[in-house]
Image 1 (cartoon, rainbow, N blue to C red):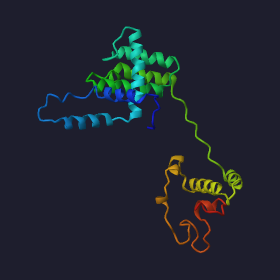
Image 2 (image 1 turned 180 degrees about the horizontal axis):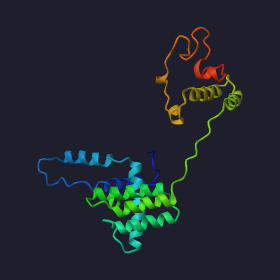
Image 3 (image 1 turned 120 degrees about the vertical axis):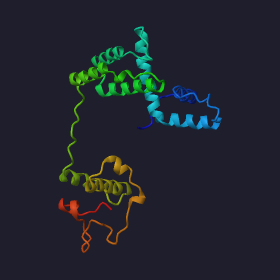
Image 4 (image 1 turned 90 degrees about the vertical axis):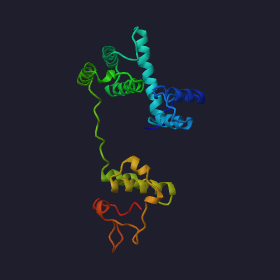
Length: 225
């Protein structure tokens, strides 16, 4: 998960880090352990969740806690019936089912680290969540339409190979097309990923040096590298 921008100051982040250790088992009664042992255990305990995840869980837990307080309910340990009402109300208010799943993860996490039974695991909560999925569903994922060869030609025609930026863009476009790479895979490419071949193009014709495979079949006369 990427960095969650919470807007917290350094002092607030320090307090958040300390509060994240509230569910850590008390090691003070174990005479055979040193202070260094306790510090290493505490550091590993906090590292179990990324800072962005801890910040997100803390924010979502705060929403649940305020909801319970407003109704005179106890948030920790939470009652499964109260959690059912909370999820149903938020779904009716427009909160996506996927977002409610993250809320349940935050509530489950907080209960577990404090040694309380997980209300999310209760059968009534499971049934309500299943009903909410059937009632509200999830947003359909629209399959992105791939670029056609003609559209790729139009894009490449606007790029000037004598300009470094355009040459870079053309190489990225052709590499992504030839390798069917995702954006994240293209962005993660490093210089160490490049192999040097005598022809300069491992997929090319060894006699003519022209592109082969996908690029050649679709009429491109330029290799991505």
